[in-house]
Length: 178
Image 1 (spheres, rainbow, N blue to C red):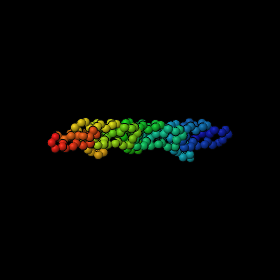
Image 2 (cartoon, one colour):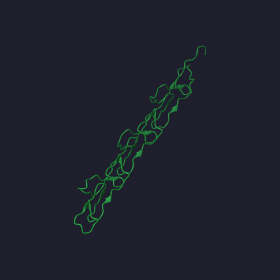
Image 3 (cartoon, rainbow, N blue to C red):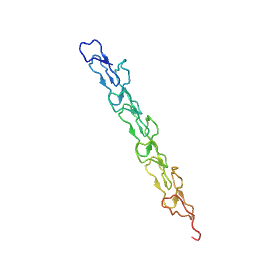
Image 4 (cartoon, rainbow, N blue to C red):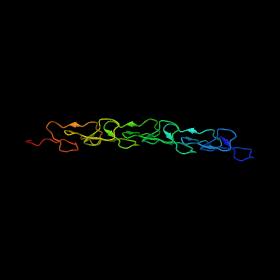
């Protein structure tokens, strides 16, 4: 944790924050490499840099701290230079996550990576599977009248009722005499 780069000096200088020296008799302190940090006060000197833990990262050298992985990302390994974005169809709502992102549940989707939440399927659409990017329109004779409730299935129109709306949002009672 100490170094001396001037000849004739009797004292060594302490390695400051973001640097270290593990070998005695060296002339310079070394910078912490990306993925590691040193937050120690200069009075103590540092003989090594700490690894950024899971859920955190650091892309800079000479770092004094690590950066938390924000919602929509995660890091499942220590000593990394960046966080991983959630894939399409997945989400993560927490800081410092160490686990892969969760699949969007059935009825909910996410079409972009790096997101902290999923979007519910709108009226006239559904998604039966988890971890999907898009909602599927209801097929003819079926409807979904839930408003942003995340439907995993469409319902059948009652017998004899019609579906004039191609969006599948409602079925209509047949007109008299038809």
